[in-house]
Length: 368
Image 1: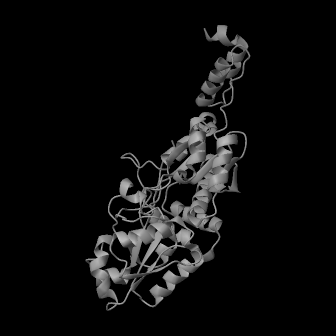
Image 2: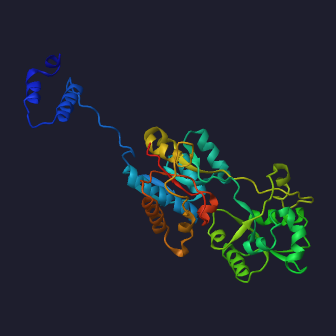
Image 3: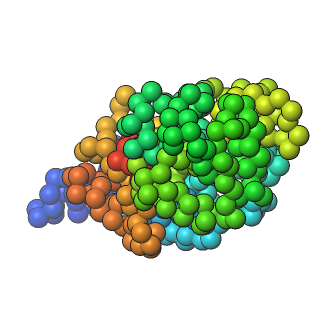
């Protein structure tokens, strides 16, 4: 049978090669049989496709760090050619929805661009691969650690009315809100009334984000008793010790009034949850499914996945004190490598971890 398939001369040359190992002989036979008819076997398609893979790097630190980490993992473990390009929520969402480029946006806040995201989903131009973070609630009110230590009973926003008069001897406590042209400024003003704090706090609305950070930092340096609004992931919450106040459940009906300039009777509610995903162009799923699988696994943490070493403090690489994001990403992945196994999948950090705490930010083995 083999002579009829291959021809006597080919089989004789294989069998008479005394220096050729048995495995090599079998390989030659297999290749020869596969190529009967003169049609060579087609090479497997490139794992990453034939063009460089574009990853959007948004302007804020957590998204920039995620982009650089994914870029390095894909280059080192899958051999991809990567282009990290500047990104913006609206511009990137629009471009992905119309042209399929960039291929990846690692931190897409889809609630904020619903008018772009929903049509792109319906047109089958983009898909969410996985959540970027394990939380869905990112905004809230915070107190410094030293206030929480002195008043362990103060764990929730509902307890502020009873606790605040004892913090400063009866004088008003500063509530550092956000800039007046931000939507959160309106929400905070109304929630202060909803919790009955109108006569207990002095609302401070800084001119911009930098003034906001400075006000919080200066208050902490003086060990002042303050309450403030902030969001995660963010380095400010990592540089100092802060505790979130439990704001209860999000109540959609209650939340509508505080979001309005005219809200006669505000009621308490947590801030609205956000959907933050790693967004992929649809063609990534169809043309380079191995890469799509990597991004899908990057947020899965099931029973069969094991972390490399202990929980990793990714946030310390995020805050960096001015260190370039690329260098911080290299340091983060270098630390993963020192844990002893290759980095091929990235568990979504908690937003707190990406802000700087040594918390639930691990890398998992998922080569696929």
